[in-house]
View 1 (cartoon, rainbow, N blue to C red):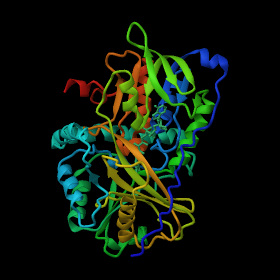
View 2: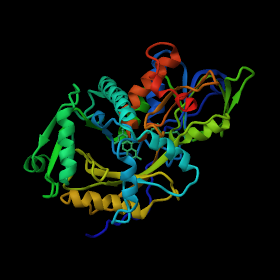
View 3: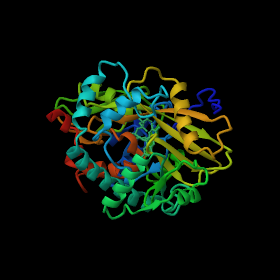
View 4: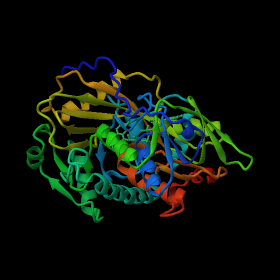
Length: 443
Ligand SMILES: Cc1cc2nc3c(=O)[nH]c(=O)nc-3n(C[C@H](O)[C@H](O)[C@H](O)COP(=O)(O)OP(=O)(O)OC[C@H]3O[C@@H](n4cnc5c(N)ncnc54)[C@H](O)[C@@H]3O)c2cc1C
């Protein structure tokens, strides 16, 4: 099979608008400063502003650091499960020794700092935390879709109406497991159709004849991440939220009572009554500057976007056995995959990218991979228990965190944002106890 010419890295940049603050805005005491203009920061800022707060979003904005733009764009409550789970360690180890020489699943490097994190991860690869975590994530995923429907339900381009996401299987064992899961899952809102190979090929003609069956998950949706991000920014603008790009936060100054008073940025310092750290994979470093710690690491992944392709996939798809996502949008499609826990270099990882593409081509040979694609590398923020970390930082009364959304940031963003905004504003629901940062400080 001929390999795709992946050429140079043409980074997808975060579409943060460049805004300037007035002198009065530099001097004022903001109700909330949100650090990070990814999908989590933007949804949080929206609900904070709607609660009446004067909100400023700051983003370092070099594009490379924003995971929210180059991802697969799947909004999949049916896949709302923690990353650690039964069998996950075995899968990761098997992936390291796979015959292809590269696995788009878990890949562990030799970073010594990683091992404490991995130990915690391993402790969560048990059935009972996995079940409880799945319940929490599913509830948030379904809530998110409702919130997105309320916000963008009328916009077919941002939030295409109910066509579902397709999960094709190519190995008997994977298919049998999928059928069992669909039949044993009685959750309202997660209705799914089981498709025979013929039916699957009718829905998605690009599939290989080796497909053994597919699940069409009706409630799951897809979006074009860049479009969602720029629509969110427009809505925020309308709600009076101020957004400052190319502004990296490097320190938070505390006052006598321990709370943060000033946010130091590369453009100057600002005052805030409350600070929300929603800086994705950058959250851990900002916490360090305060002498605080959370077990946040990041998992690198890639997307490969083809434009002017013909034929296009008919639906958003997740090839679960290969952990590869495929999403169509106007005139093009995107292939995503890879989860590298110990990134060795910041550039593109040719072996990894070709590995992801090989998995996609062998299962969907009927798509057009002929053009020179746009390559992107992003860093998902990960926690060792596979749940986001959303809530107030203990010991720093006015510092809040919303990060660690792993593979589900787009799916969970609206629910996370609404919950953290509710808790910060003293109205609405407290973020769920199981997501609070202090769970890691109790262990
Ligand atoms: C290959 C791949 C495919 C994926 N597919 C999906 C999918 O289909 N569906 C789904 O739901 N999720 C998916 N995800 C996961 C999703 O992309 C992430 O969970 C989500 O984007 C995380 O959002 P965030 O806002 O926390 O972080 P980010 O999007 O990374 O945003 C953080 C922002 O903070 C800024 N920042 C960092 N440090 C600082 C600082 N010191 N000062 C100021 N600003 C700072 C950065 O510039 C960045 O813009 C995928 C991820 C990958 C890698």
